Length: 218
Length: 218
DNA sequence: TTGATTCATAATCACTTGATAAAATAAATA
DNA sequence: TATTTATTTTATCAAGTGATTATGAATCAA
Image (cartoon, rainbow over the protein chains, first blue to last red):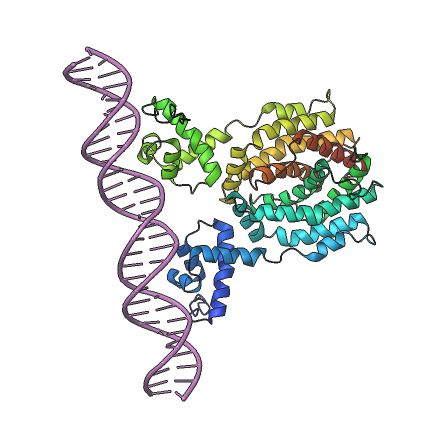
């Protein structure tokens, strides 16, 4: 049997935009796997080009890394997440499940979560920024909806307590940690993430009804 | 005001064991902060010695890293965690709170969790090993205790279901993620971790009673 | 076909980085 | 104090690493 080599070498002279996209696509995977200390020569070899060619498309390694960040983290936040969470024509349980399934489709991706963690470890401010967005856009609305579900006063009347927020963070973090176990530790996890979400949401909602946030008296 | 310099330079000629311990202590912090790509010269400068001196005490950088791992991850698992979790003379709620407070004292430390995450990203098998230990030694016993609390059959009779385990992982990961937000993202978190644990445990236990694991009929 | 243009590579530079060997210096011992 | 011994530093190497320059090769317009 003769090895099929037809698609192995004809890689020369793509159009600039094709080549650029190819570099970016591979760079995303490459940096996700090896971190930002990964060598440009290794990246080039993986793409099947020479290392100086990278510098024709990106002036410096940092520029390439910046582009990788843009590729992965631009517009990943879906506006409908926030609005859907507030849509009381759907049950809160259903809204939470929908949100976490949709959120996980993006955030649990191998490249997304690994680059996010590398970025966090290196002290990049991106993580703190997103943490804040998640808190303001999703977790605080969730608090409000839980208040409503439990017949408690609106957060406009009684501001969210730090503990209340942390309670929602435990759910959020618990589901996020599923992806950490899977994509960072490469640990074996149950495939049926949807059921995990459903069960966790049920439990949290039930628990929130039972153990309401106290000290809401002004 | 004259700056106090008395303790700045008299660092020469420690006993070998003192010097070695000094190197290890600083290396733990150094690699926790910058990852294992941190430069030996930077580490040496931080300690206040020259870089070749490191190589008198550790033949290679990898040997030093190996020693750092030992320093941080040797014997961190307390045998009493497992036994206390099974001690039915204490309420399950109390046992879980005690366990997570004690567990967090070790695992939530800045150095511990950061080196753990760096190690995970680089594919070190340590993480998978510990995940397995946590699962076998702590989470599975917790499942058994929850079964008992809820009047369900023992895991000896009906093996733990994957979903059941994942439910406990959500609690575990949720509390772990608190430390990630704090020590990896450097995000602001509520200081009172104990109350977070207490609330989360109450909710999970309540939810587990309400939504028992089904399909336990043989 | 030919020549201009642009993509791609080979060769190489300057600097970093883990590691080594020789020189210097501090403590210990007689 | 003089001598020995062990610690620490100075100087340096060899391999790597981001980046540059000059050369080669493919495409397209005429």
